[in-house]
Length: 129
Image (tube, rainbow, N blue to C red; front, side):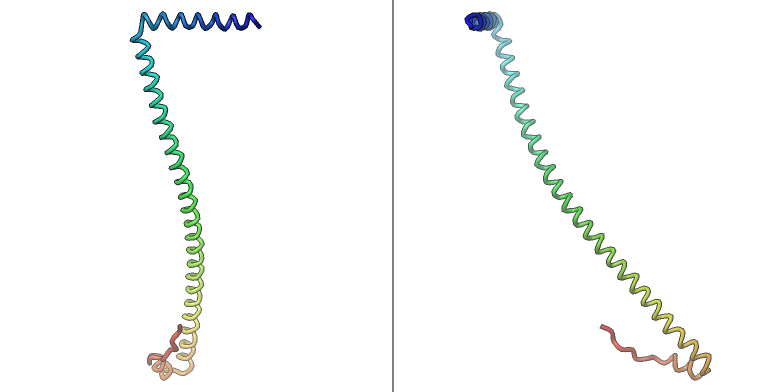
């Protein structure tokens, strides 16, 4: 245990001696190194702040992306619903036009010219809501 403390003291004395030697002989290099350390510390703090800002922006972008994804999904559902409604209306219109065309052709064939003239007259159709 005593040797351990003697070793620590001897190490501190040697380190102090080396520091004192360089402090006396090359003070400009020590001040330059100190400035560089401070400069790198400032760069580190600026970089740390920038990374923090980027992480914050990434979180916001992720949140906005999730919201946009939900909106796109809702728009797809609405588009699908409207497309189905359009297809249903097209089928209904096609079936109504077929129904409307088929009695007229049979009336023309059966009744002759009088039925064709009646078809040309405008018909009153009930208003649909």
